[in-house]
Image (cartoon, rainbow, N blue to C red):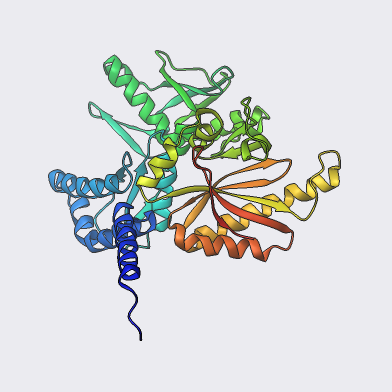
Length: 397
């Protein structure tokens, strides 16, 4: 084989060094990082379970802090906690993502990526508690969730729930402890997801409320009462199980043919991305995700059916296709653990599927496969979510 000229060899060497340097600068994918965490956790699981169920408070705290530190390293801001459990039974590890939507979404992705681990159960939120759940001992008197008496109301101005709490033993606590205990009881009744989304305020009552009060409920029935109040508003945006925020076309002017100029309405479980794109014009959320090995993008698609807002039948067919396409994309990404669907939007020209890719290289052929499998999809492209660099990452069809 002839030897390449020296100049060509130098160019190849330089290109290789540049590619290597770029690879060194890029963080590992979120998928690779979750796999590393899962391998570490599986290796530690037996000792961690023994420590957490040992009854030795200090030993349990050391184990919990070690796991918590690794979780926070994977998703900064994400905390974990563990449900008490008798020795020999699985320990439930639940996440505490707070109100940060990025942390919430990546926390759910982490739980979805974890393989089964013997003696542990993983949940993305603290689940609603059972009626006999022990909340606290006040003096020698135990207080269970079922012992709370509540009045739950819908606050139209705050678009959420306000709960008033009474228990015969709460008056023996100081004001701050009373308030903290009442809120803890409501949080346990609601479960973390509903508490974060819909709870606006908790107040302590001095006197026991009468059963005739609207929204009266014992602690064990509080969640069901709250769900009923939300559904009574007859507003789809107040669905108690809703995790998405709806949004509409921005008032700003955008270049013709761009997503923001086309879009009419949408919904997202990660509204930070949409806000950055339509309002803020900054790549902050995209860059934040990128540092964690996550690519934020959207798939823009057109249909073989013309979208005509004045032709109800055609419009309905196109919207149904866009929904089906989004569902197919979400399922395919989740099945391979390479990403997740976080929102959808619709415009006059195109439909948009907002995705987070936990391994962009592995996700691209999957997105392409889904696009090519649907004969009603005329064209589709994966586009960066960045408002400052909205480049096409891959033409899918």
